[in-house]
Length: 120
Image (cartoon, rainbow, N blue to C red; front, side, top):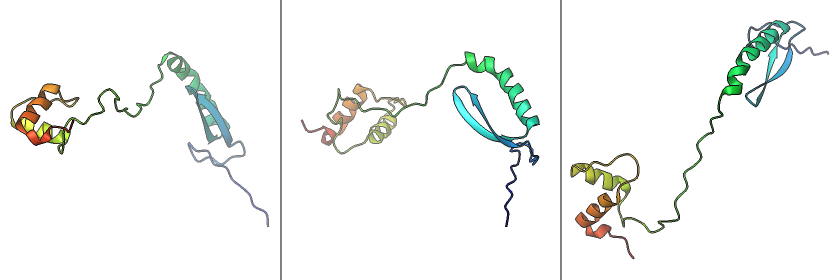
């Protein structure tokens, strides 16, 4: 029993004899797709139009994981989280942004919660 493999164009479903795996590059990335001659020609034309844009574009790197600073290894609070500090500060009318909590906010929290003072 013979088996025949039919390769189909990934764009339009065409299944002619000219459909084959085609490799191409864009911006340093390598890709492969099954295309017939007509769609491969269209791809070549599109890539030629795209080339000046890719050449002038900057590569955007994916953000890495944040690293914990070794400069301040001691815990800021004992038994409380930053969420606790933010909630307390908001209730007190103290503005706390989304970034690092200011030292003065920690100081005020510890003054109001003596049990939060870290062990020295």
